[in-house]
Image 1 (cartoon, one colour):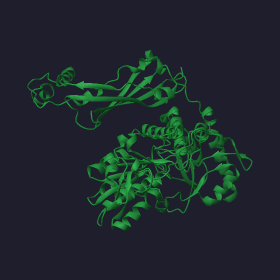
Image 2 (tube, helix red, strand yellow):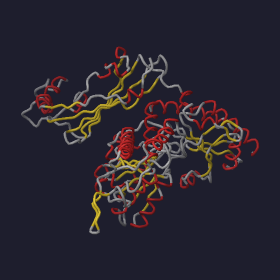
Image 3 (spheres, helix red, strand yellow):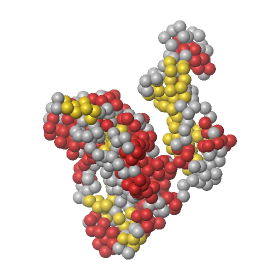
Image 4 (cartoon, one colour):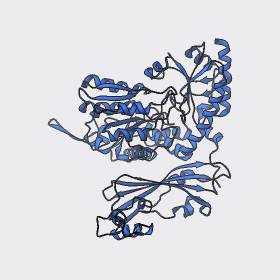
Length: 553
């Protein structure tokens, strides 16, 4: 049976509101064996309500439980053939022993194992108190033995009309996805429909078109927030990652940093995560410190943690390198930074298109994404920030829509995130980005990651057989990005001749000059893959590369 993934990913699992009593807390502890030894005072703290009662952390698994919701026939799941997989609990603050709690459960991802092989369903339950503070996250994996066989990658490819064209009389092989992704038909159609049916400006209009445009714009914010697993009111919509990082630089860092402070930046960063910090340092007297790499292109984590000294106030790091494909352990890095009181800014541009994200679990202070790399339109992106930062930060740009009231005596700014969204936004672009998020969610980001891992393995093996070819960045678990050189040939010359063969790859320094300086090279070729690429395209690319090499070498 094939699951309707769109339906399952958006299935309305009922919210559960539970009144927890001290009696409930004690009964749970007793049920799992606490109190069997009345002489062990440590156990008594969990079962004696006359003492300073504590809740067993594992109780988070049963609090606000939504019940067996997969039994609902509307899910399309063969409930008879379910198998419970693994379960994980993350405690964000001590569990209360009594009070009103609210649990919200959602499907976070689906991995299709293929026809007759079943599927894996990932879900997460978040338990919050009455004021909305996150207490615990409980994640579960369920094996759907009776399902699978959903993703037809040939049909997926047909959703991308540009991939059907020819270049210089040759079928296009597009391998420049790290620069920008191609757009599927639903994204193109969503933008077209906006301009045809309800084009209007957002906010404050009382007419029907204005209301529809505003609803669509805010719906895109909500979809992107769900994709990142963050709250919509903590997500600032903007033109992309460059704007998002500059917003942090000018609105958070510039008013706070001073002479003697240090900004820690990894060597693998894109210029968009280097230059803003240099500008801040010039204006504040702060210093830039560089976190270095290991020869395989991974971060030197020991060196990074040693560099997190007391004067470091901010750490800027990429989730995924746009040149090397290195996937940094940002959750671990942010945890270490948080222990030292260091604010973290994570560039997620190259992560969002390729993997399932849980920004809340990463534990960073700021996370930036761009829409055009994840099948959405250009000029779209977002900055997620912790609520306390958004409330404390002054606006970056002044103008319309980011205010509540203006007089010549002063201005009352709008609430976050809107106080950072001055001027007319790219409404049609964000409508398209909302459609792109829907599209990726239907595919399942775990399916995307698995597909791209297979393509990467094929491409890496094939390229390693090319004489004189050197790959930069061999870190384990890397994303589907391959930067390489061919001995005796200039990268730009090779890219030009590959284009004549219909193959689109990037050549140059990829907005990462310090990184290429580390490797001692002036430029590289970069082939970056996406889920809509094929194994046949990889073979054609390597065949064209061998032909070009014979001409140049």
